[in-house]
Image (cartoon, rainbow, N blue to C red; front, side):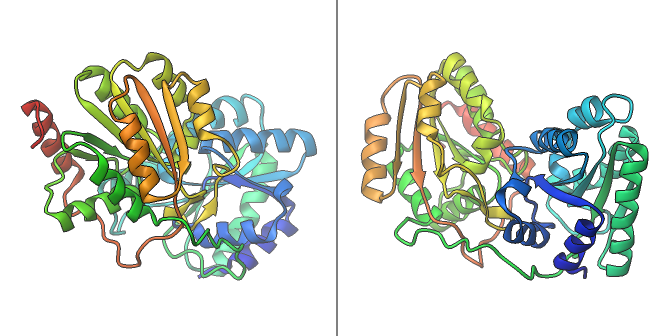
Length: 381
């Protein structure tokens, strides 16, 4: 495998001195190293992958130096517009390296949403006319590709891609201290408190990553068939808009979104749409641990901003929190439960999850079919 330190040092020596992006599970060791060794002015964890391209562009315009953007291939779609209409050689011609974790690469076992994305990744890059090379566990080859990327980005004055397969990077040689507050509930404890306090007829849309996985396991433990839950296994940042679509189409149904801080930051404009145009019974619950927990625990800015303040400014009728205890969760949900319109509850939770946390055994399609069948019944099933 390639040492994150050696790979970083090679890039730095070649003039790559600014990093931005959204952390990825395949790149988490490299991302952890970058986060540990660089000062804040040289590393920005962006809200989404497209904004990272914008940040990198601004840095390159200001300094003439070569930036690196990192992301998972599931977020490649967020970069298509800025890569083609901003950084492309035929538009503003902004050189940058884009390091992409290749989930679902051919021959790799992965989840359905990653297998689809992985299968078409190379075709997407070809269609975008962006040159790329593949990073494997061979360190000499990876360093040669790093040199190729820096030279090619400068020569063509545009983006180039390094596509990292699973196992490309070894363990990080440095890590930021990510110790979370020990007095906070775990995310699982908060999810259990929320589901226990919600009326039985509630319909839940759970966001990408650990939240969906922990909700699924809780349902399994309690004998609930999970028909009331839509588990958003991909499409990070869009769960709240799925919930909004449901609540507007079914104004008589109680729709709840279990969201994460990284997800809500990724497409925060959705709050404005929900707050102004929401017409149904929509309860938006944000489990905020200040981290991208599913992909290595790199920090978000969610503890440094007021999510309840943003929701209120975006037109949510009521916004409470952050709350931190089971008793406060129950009290807040009792207060919000029967109020009209879009409401938000922010819950602060700790980082981390059980090492034996599993994944849903149902396929996404099976989850959808069970979920829709319950909706069509018009009552809790």
